[in-house]
Length: 122
Image (cartoon, rainbow, N blue to C red; front, side, top):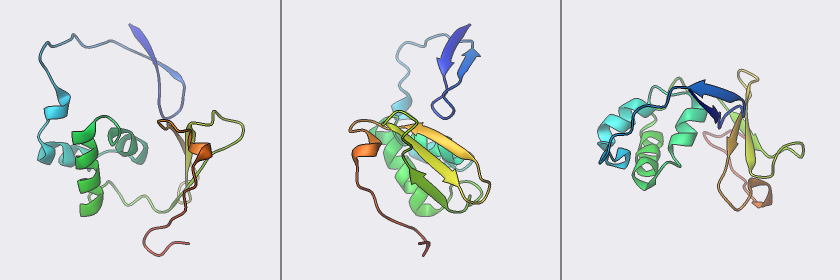
């Protein structure tokens, strides 16, 4: 068994590591298959999949453009909290009230200026 930290909740999870497969390159997964998979994921997983590699990011952008991400989750607030690491972004669902935590690459999220909305939400 191997312990890994969840990128969403930060809690330690135990799982059995799959055997390595020499020569298997997940970045070569066909875009149409990856887009279908993205359509079944929850928001934090969709968001995380967009930072795996360039080809997955392109598929992530295409899935968003096509509007096939799962279950129209409603509006989310995106912010950084002073009681968390500066690189951790909080996605707060206004629909469910749930918080999802995502670690962002450098520069730390707290140092960025981001303003925006979608679908007329302000």
